[in-house]
Length: 235
Length: 80
Image (cartoon, rainbow over all chains, first blue to last red; front, side):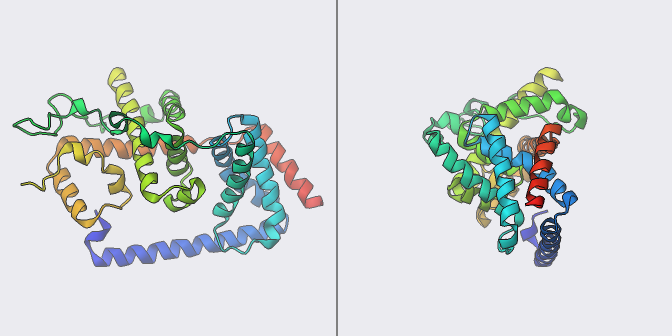
């Protein structure tokens, strides 16, 4: 299933993604036209899609939910005012999110609060995806560094989707993410919830692609661990 | 074989694998390990499921108040 494995597949992929990108560009141009014409439905669909993401992004810089909401509203105001000058050089989504980020950074600085990326200095045990005691000793004669007997992850294939999507599970994931170190919380929120590309995340948070992936991996690993603990006790 | 990947190493590479950023030689070692290791296959599937479920957090809709505020903002802009 690796797209690198065949040239034909690779070519098909690139054609498909280009067609997809073209369609998105056309859809966006139409949307921008409708907005300029004052089409309320177009605006509603846009805010339905992005407003909550904007508020989430703002909250990475500002604790106060009411201020985050205000910043997201100010962003929409700036978007509407800027529409006549929007040339579509970046995607509409990127443009909107960049406006919010700039506002949030300024506001966050005023509140003497900025994203702390200090968790790169965390202890190593804290930064591992899986607790080291779940693996055989590196010096073990048989299967060093492999899953220890009884400590390996079990398949979730038999667990019904409803369990995963239940309010309780969603709440658990939400709480786990809220409890993550800030930089991890920021990256997993932007990447896995708001579906912002890695490259855009690097721009927004001003970090390298490698750091971005490390943070994303740690964050996902913590959420997976929380799910594993929860499912083990429930089922 | 000294280039065999251990489970402990594999679990740290899952995000790079899913984001398709593993260098070719690592990708070969990763896939070779996973094809023969049920436990790591489970781990990879769990990570996929974790990402899928996390993504469902966005399926929230606007509160009526938020909607009203935004519509008001739009109508004001339109009039100006």
